[in-house]
Amino acid sequence: MNVFRSAAGATTRLRGVRHAVALAAAALATVGLSACTGGSPEPAATDAPAPVTSSAPVGNTAAPTALTGTRFYLGTTDQEAVIHAVRGDVDRVTARIPLGAGDCVRNTITISPYGERLAWVEGGAGKDAGALVTSMVDGSGRRTIERNLPFGATVSCLGSNALVWSRNDHLMVQQGREHPVLVDVADGKPVNGDPGSETLKWWSVDGRSQAAVSEGRTYASGASGVHFYRYTPPKAEAAHHDGWRVRSVSMDGRYVAVGWMNTDPSRNDGSFAVVDTTTSTVVDLPGEGDIRSILFTADEKVIVRRAGGITVLDKSFRPAGTIEEPAPVRDLTLLAYAA
Image (cartoon, rainbow, N blue to C red; front, side, top):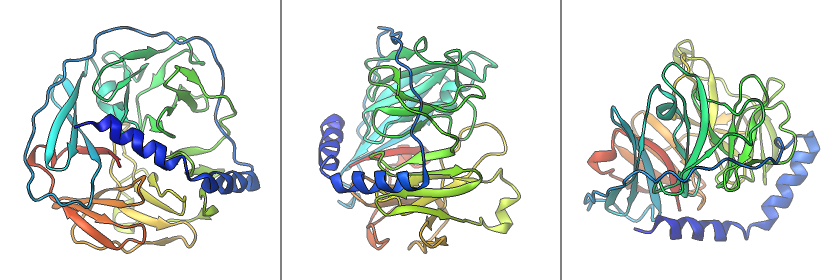
């Protein structure tokens, strides 16, 4: 399996969508939404060898062609985080990352939208912050980014989404009580610009559309325009959670997938509903059973994951196929899909 070739191909195809960039930029200018923070000191890198990787092919003869790309899953043991890459009927372990002391690695390890990079925070036992670490998806090219970051060079590892990707090389991190910092992980430097005061940000796979909260108002922006919307979660469930947030954005910025935030500062990757931000209505998704997570993909599909498997929808939310997940990944976290 060559996940790098697939990811690069997706990147190349998406760069051709020039009109989406222009529309999104014009829409953002209308409401004065801002970009993210700056600074350019030299990064500190380590040449530590990558963790030993292994592969364990698992047949899945029932898998159709509804998804031709690679799905990436996260599993954990007592000692390590394990990254699985599932393509076609094969499940492979691509990287093993030691958890170390404390819960930072377990709570933060994430993968870039096109499946090329890993990122996580390393902190000691009892710590709620640490150093930002990145590598390629196979664990190679490990790099610690710390001296170049402002505000003391420690990154928070708390919260239901401590690290959020804005595109394949840009990662938003939180440092103490300061504004979030957008870091270019390819060169280890903050991205130039002002982060503004928006909170709970999330981006589409290509980074051209986004959703956030501005002065208490939820909005989404992209090729479809800028839309302030409202969403009221089910009353029977809302009392048990600390509210909701966006966890996936459609390529045009019109639709968002939402999920609960935890009542404790730990990891949460789930989502359970899609909201049309132009009408503030919940989309009626086909399929049966409780929804575990929803992903909008670069090739404009919608992955709806339930306990019984995956339903693939087209961009109009019509069924396009189903996927029976290999047994080793059925109970793992679905991190990303690279078309």
